[in-house]
Image (cartoon, rainbow, N blue to C red; front, side):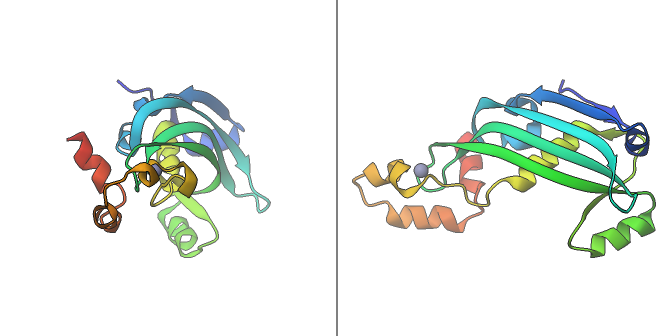
Length: 169
Ligand SMILES: [Zn+2]
């Protein structure tokens, strides 16, 4: 069973709540699909604050290290997480729709029982590079002598993580 931390988002802001913790990459089920292995650790914090306009906001900070899969050589690639997000809490569906039209803000709908770790996981996945790769001089593909350039192109054309998924099957 994975850990859960349920908050009532508006109450959390009203009480200027703060929650922080650590989680292992393997504990986040949807994130696991993107990982090369389960090394690393993720630290997170969620705070309930009001923005300069007095609107309720969840401030999320995520740091740590996870291991992605290089899309050129398919071996592991250490990836540093450094996510800082402000999520406006919409009190009604109408408010949510109006926030949604504004590209400068991210919003979520208020909920009495929101799973904070699901939110953390969403933010991590959103922050991942679309096509993670080693730097040119660090990528082991440069050491492979057989001509794999055609194969590499084929991998890159697919969804960036499709090759990882097929490897795991
Ligand atoms: Zn590589």
